[in-house]
Image 1 (cartoon, helix red, strand yellow):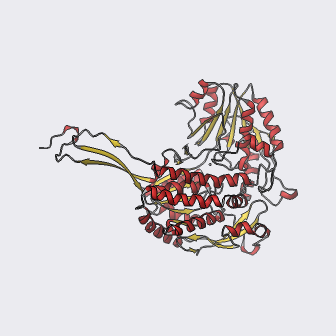
Image 2: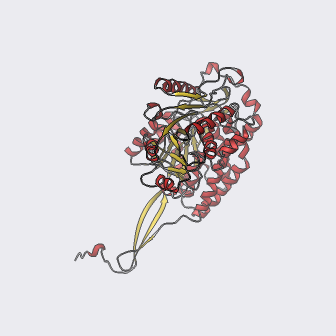
Image 3: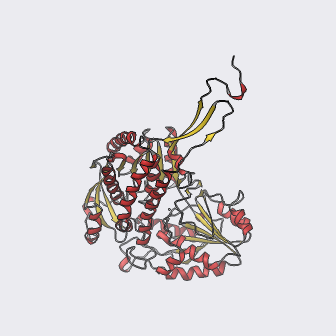
Length: 543
């Protein structure tokens, strides 16, 4: 998902759900331990303190419960956040609606200049923000920095859009008439982001929503509130310096009650939701019931196909990063690997050797390739998946254990895992957000395409081949049914210039590049009569 792509070779050399359960710890056992003090300079530079307000609507406040941001490396509390209530969300919606009325009157190039100032503020804080992502989410530092860079890149892209967005001039069949297409802002975009990309997902949506003239209200994952607070403070400063209402980019942290208020409120013209398919289905229904618009970025269950004519060395490097990067917690992580039977043993043998070289540890430590899972519940999901694999007749080829001893025992660390399964097993049909890669064999390319498509999800897919016939079949109507269809690159590492999103139970939404900006707009077809006459279309004569 990051535009600053970490390739498989660079990873070896070092040897792109919001309503999930919060990492809440009973108040009686809360201790603000060493994590904050150890990283105090970085956190304070970003405006993060031991106690923080989690609502911003032009002023910082919060009347909800206290939430605890937890370091997944050791499960120590980093800091506390006083979250928002349903009433806080109601007030924030009212204020962002009013701010948007001013913002929509800015010319699009004027909006672009404000986004340029936001871009520069983020770039100036690139490494501190990247470190915060690593601390709170758990991804390795290069990926954390890369995620913030992705937000910077999307703002660059939005700046370009501010000088290039255009509609159409459509020929009219009536003399003395012209038809044009207009694109105007919807109003307010509600962004519900997930823990795994606590900065970039908001960045994709807010940059494009703002350049198209919308206000933005952010409801982040309950488990990554500090990242959202740090970003919002930077945006607040920029908006104030630009003499704009700071409530244009509002924030309400909290749980499902706050998220439900945002989803069901008509003032949120567009909801962009990133998270699980189960929750996304409910979000989609709730938004549709009020005839709102939505962008859903849900489950992935992504696959790579390796054919008999593939570059095996290139494929093995790509697969390692795609399956192990972010500890298997990307929506574009490779979950399934289909390998032609003639090269299966060679490729899987290379992967087993590579997996043995993967360093698991603190994401801030140099050389670490795989950090912790985000929560204890994710570790439990990993353990359950291992049991299901064995119960269904699958084989664990390497990994397959939770780290319960040594320096990492206090954290949420697991070993990246390779399995050998058959394509008819239920275990490969459902995505588990952990570093488990299921490998299986195929005989024909048509069989491999069927295996790729034979799941409910349809986000990202890739084939490794040197055969042009296979490439063009793969990207054609009888090929992959996913939204992202790659060739000789992994399933992850999407660039911001393309539309990001998937089909089927992935939700069908598109974010970031190409013409995704149109989803944030109200489309109008305008016919202008300058003839002084009143001819009707289709040659109708009405007296």
